[in-house]
Image (cartoon, rainbow, N blue to C red; front, side, top):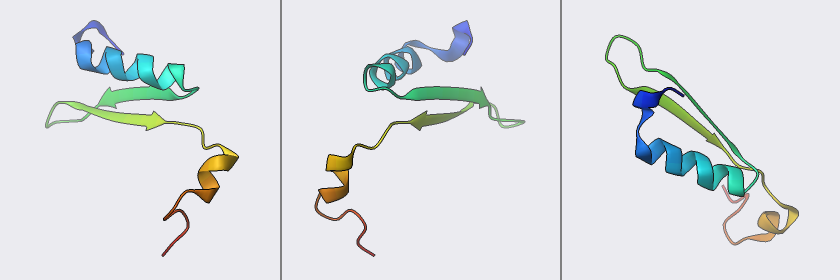
Length: 55
């Protein structure tokens, strides 16, 4: 992530890291912008949350 990524992306990266996650950002192509991917780990307790696995 370069210096043009902005303050918001920096905050997202800090929050993700605090929860054991990662953030990647790549150029969005001809239209500009960024494609941002946030990955957060799932704990075993989350498997029991209402609505998880429904569908």
